[in-house]
Image (cartoon, rainbow over all chains, first blue to last red; front, side, top):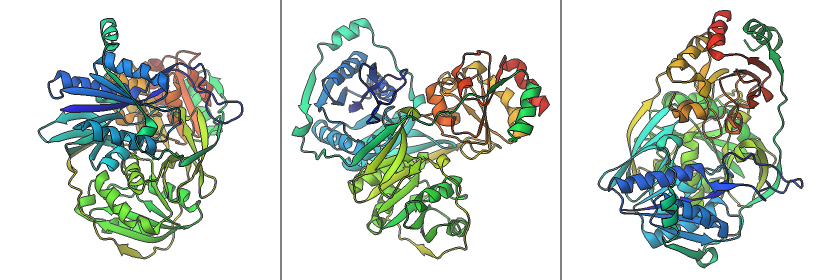
Length: 249
Length: 308
């Protein structure tokens, strides 16, 4: 079976986002970028399914400007067989992304699409669910275990207060949570090999999707700062302060 | 203009997220109907009808909704959507699951995890793990919104309103419930607890989390963890407090052996009082803590338990 893994280029996990002085957005100029952590988990899961003989082909796809090909090369180095770059300079919303991806699903007919549950920039947590809706497929979100059977996939989901397992009819959409797996690092020989793997470029506006904005970004502000309090010297002082000063115990 | 709120519950108990999401929905300025979708809802209906701000309670009681499968709930909400300008749910794992599906089926964008309502079209929401707050305006005629419940107060009570039964749309056939594993706990749920005590990588292993039990018992606290502790395999992910876990805002938050990574702060910095216990005086957690104790947690935790 074929697995499609949509990935996203985002600000590096370890970099603190700063708001631009004019409040128009977050400043991403000269900031280190990387593959979204949940997308790394999605790639890893797809590759493991291939290594287990369940999947035959892993296709990575991303939407963005030319630089996002860097993340596709990473996906190829990690073990994806081919990559698709949907090129656009526009800043797209989850609904646009899901619509563009649905076109790729039409083109590639994957039996399973595995995506990260959210990207760490916009923190929307929408794309996988929207793609499932647009393609009329079942969805297994926030997966901590993916078990492919014949004709179905059992997905164990991280839900509030525990775990829920659902059986989805294939083809289906899965979004990854943190504990699904631990992503590997790409080896140097594989990074070299990735340069020769196929990477197809498609212009976003050639896919017939209305990309007009649905959400206007009015402004972006720094969050309210919380100021540091005091250092207490021992447990007794701490308990006393919590009782008499903060009055929370 | 009218708002539909989808209630958060577990077929037995209405979750506090429902009451908080109602507060956000009322702020939109229109009449609010509350939809209760699940199975065997009779006992809960009266409570739901008594949440302040509810104009009509809609009850969809059917096996298809017993486990809140996203495909089925989305079809149900879609069938009701013609009557509403705003569709609102809390950003729990249930709301996050079915709401984007509703939005895509309606061909509208979703505004995720709002923390403030500016007007009927404009909202504030955190982005970049809470390192920035975006003010966004929806340009769609219909709005699909999820609410970060911890940012809103619990709605008061009212005399119960009328209840209408809603026809089931049945099962989509796309997904089926297999099993549910509830984390067994006598403790309150993380997102509802008045006190939360969380352990980080400094706890060193899963067994050491037992050191938090006695303190949690005495304070009636829920026990959480940082992502580092979850990634290290100490504790399950449903204990995770942070950007990628649960967002909490208790009266008292005690961070033990947690350095205070951005991603963790995003999940707890709205707590009323924050206590940090860490042996590293330079740990960033001290910059947000009201009370800091620079000490080895293995010395301090037993002492704290005795002192309470």
